[in-house]
Image (cartoon, rainbow, N blue to C red; front, side, top):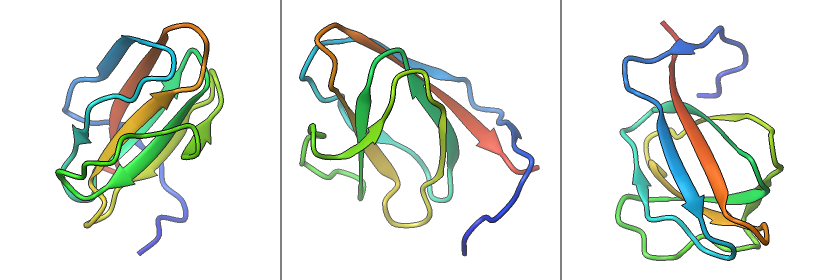
Length: 103
């Protein structure tokens, strides 16, 4: 079911930072639980690829783009509960992830 509108709060889980991801490099898999809500942003352009837990494909330049300094919020649902990010920039990137809650 789609979430059409909600006021989200920071979840009990601590925020995560992926620091100094090199140019043209994919992160390792970030495995989340089912129906996890999270916000993500970065200080350079990145892409994001979702998959089932343990998926082997690396994120690449052709995945969904998240522009620098933009915050996107996702609900991973039940199946695609893992993701990887790819650095599109020519310099290292810092990626910031905040887990959210509807309650």
